[in-house]
Image (cartoon, rainbow, N blue to C red; front, side, top):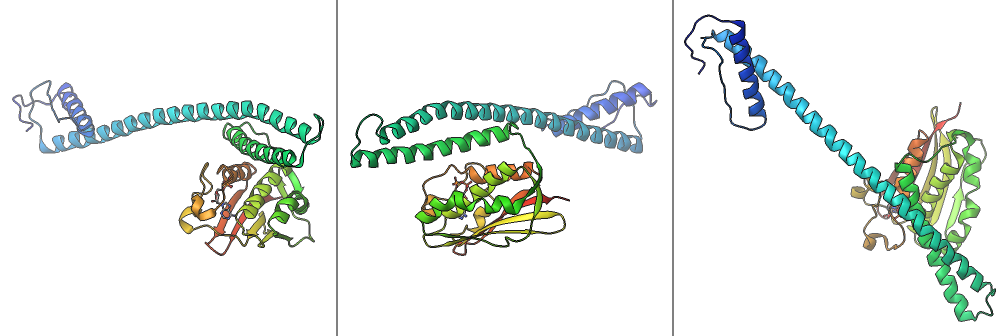
Amino acid sequence: MLRVRRPAVTCAAAFAVFASVVTASIAHAQSRPLSIRFAESHEFEADEREFLVALAQQCGQALERAHLLTAERAARTEAEDANRAKMEFLATMSHELRTPLNAIGGYAELIEMGVRGPVTALQRHDLQRIQRSQEQLLSLINDVLNFAKLEAGKVEFNTRAIDVRETVDALEPLLAPQLAAKQLTLQSVDRTTTVMAIADEDKLRQVLLNLLSNAVKFTPDGGQIILSCAHDERQVYVRVQDTGIGIPTQYLGRIFDPFVQLERRLTNVVSGTGLGLAISRDLARAMGGDVTVESAPGSGSTFTVALKKAE
Ligand code: ADP
């Protein structure tokens, strides 16, 4: 009840009431008990009261919003600092792991070549296994290092107008051993015309190799992979289509998140970090493009790299 003794309204009194109601609104906003105090006695008219209360409530809400904004900014800065520390750790760790791994690969190769003396067939077989595992581990570590660099904004891009078709045509020989191991066919369609896009050629090659090696990994023996280029007025599209196991709809939105992989029982594939697609999409986006997917279990997957078309 705003019932007081002295009838005259003074500015000081009005301000005091106003300030008290503001305090009350803030207290209310922060779920503390509501309290109203008066500096001077005064009986307010209903419309004065209504006005002051409405004004006070709006100030209270504004202050509450300011309070939330400050808290949100502090939380964001904290999360960014934590993310930076994580990325720096990943970059340092991957770098440190690569040096001894390269030595393991190098010495295994020396022994296999017979530089240290004769090697039996059984030893050669084991040495080749060491080399394959070393290569696999190195590629996982490279993924982590690449991802950490990308997230830290430490990757430089040399974007210019390139002929996408040339980049696409140069990929087949790089994949030949993986394709042969699984009797997969790679068909490259629409070879004839030049398609110019704005891209960093090395980064585009890295994106397409990631998508192609996933297609190889997730397509059963004897399957088919189709590489195609298309364009419209604004964009160039490179598609990697496979006849593989496909991806259930509920996972489509998440497979581009770092470290996300479908459950092993669904894919039957053990290698990988779950970083390939995250890296590919980051690279494509940094070039002004994107990577998207369409897929359904049992009907294969189509990954599309979109790039800006060169004038
Ligand atoms: P990785 O291949 O190292 O597991 P990626 O980020 O490249 O990581 O892929 C994330 C996940 O998306 C894979 O583990 C797999 O479950 C799914 N995936 C990617 N490409 C395909 C594909 N062509 N067919 C089916 N599943 C795929």
